[in-house]
Amino acid sequence: MTVERIEKVFLILSAAMLVVFLAALFYSSSVMGLHLPDREEEVPPAEVRETAPFDELGVHQVGAGEYEAVFLGRAWAFEPSELRVPVGAEVTFVATATDVIHGFHIEGTRLNAMLIPGQVTRVSYVFREPGEHLIICHEYCGLGHHLMYGTVIAEGR
Ligand code: CUA
Image 1: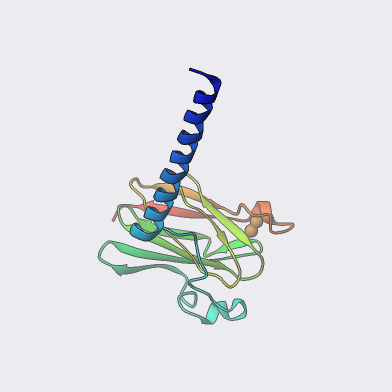
Image 2: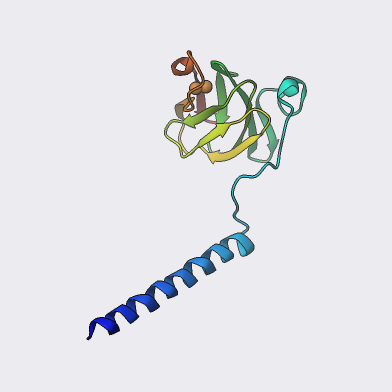
């Protein structure tokens, strides 16, 4: 094969890859409905504690096998600092920050999100095994950042 031919093959391959990637992007956004997190749910930062669902912090059952764990991130604690959730249930963590940007990672799970004042963060998870998981703030939020942690306890029903 001549150099020109090889070059042509690579050009066609790269063009084909672009088409495949664009098609995948289009498919995932239009057919599967996947999209980046959006400003779907907002909450006035000054009135967080008076606004549902943050007027009732903690774990609540919302359906058959479905729970919501509502908590706040503030300098420098998670409120409540302990969340007890049932093993095997779909738990949606609903959270926001009251002052500055915080983050949370629940150790041993894929849950990792930011807590932004004014915006509501929702992520779901099913704990398959009983156990204790640390919730760690992973956005630098000031002097006490390293002291900001909580616990999720997954326990049998
Ligand atoms: Cu909150 Cu770091």
